[in-house]
Image (cartoon, rainbow, N blue to C red; front, side):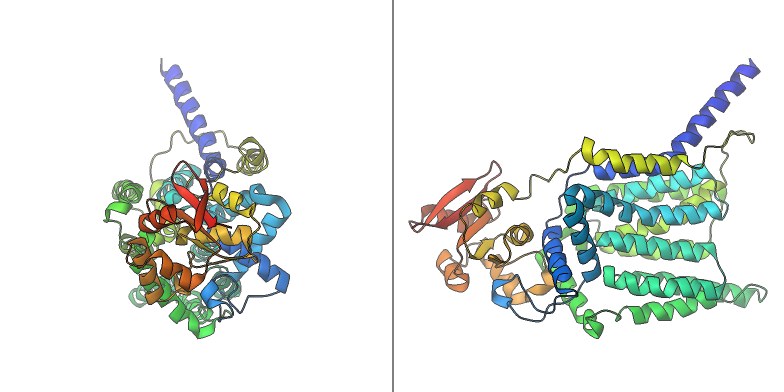
Length: 477
């Protein structure tokens, strides 16, 4: 009877170990099976194409009809160029794989660092699974994927505790690249500052511990890296404007977790937090710097959901360290082949683009834009601002837009004017006088007053209407 029990236990342990080894591939499969839903990736890609054609950041506004030729911030220019290059080489399928590997790379590299420092394989797999679930609702094809990779690399560097010179030599260029891929290296400033402060406090209590030289130096480097982009010190004004306009528009990712629009996003965050607290209470294994960094990013996530990705990355070493102290089965275990996780990831990356071709979310007005392209019009296309990105990607340079998803591009007064149009305070005649559009691409419910005027106007005719109410109007001839 005991022999049978041992056999069942060994078989269960073997399944657990092999399942843990396949977690990275499972994460990749989940991402590749998702539809493309972010409207902003379209203008990002078109801007990336222009960057590649011109050999550097675009200095002047090319898209917004009323801002043509004005100075253009170079926010995320390196990511835009990289993603546009990948799409040009292999289409949307290649871009999906590339973006997923970059996004997941941040999780995998800190997980590898935890494994190298002694965390058990099952604990690391658990950390990956939980943190992935917390960040998954925010995952989409966009430059923030490079921020995930950069943040993961920085956390791994701190976790490995290399010699100070090696840490600084690796960390400094990483921080500069991070800011040029995605302007969020301030997260690195926060994380490094916490590590430096925690290390200094530990040294003051025990002079036998090493001074946090690398963390302190890299904190200063990270502060300097915030301005190491074509925008220089103006990045502060750009970031402030983007935040203000995002809040004014009511973008849910910029708002706290407790608002109704973020309730579903709050569920995995709360679940992961409670599970981690339960594990840590049981094992009492933690590193104070890692915990403080995770707590700081948790507070930021609660106040603005867009920081959930960085919090999830910071939770990987916290969970892995705590879960390593849990019982994992018999001491004599058959090792999992080291090549298995990598092989599974490679197979998923090669097969899924063919087995599951690219799907676009129904909310994207791609059919409407395809119909408009058949008219061969040139000029400004007035579209609901979420539709501006797809319009830019499909029609530039023939088409310009009135609005798009770049919150920092348009002033507070312009966003108020947009709200006036959507609420019926600004009539169709004023919209025509301001932009002289050649076409409209709007959603009937979202922009009901304008849609109603167009429907009753003898000067405009509808050439398309989707099942969810996206309509296209052009001038009657």
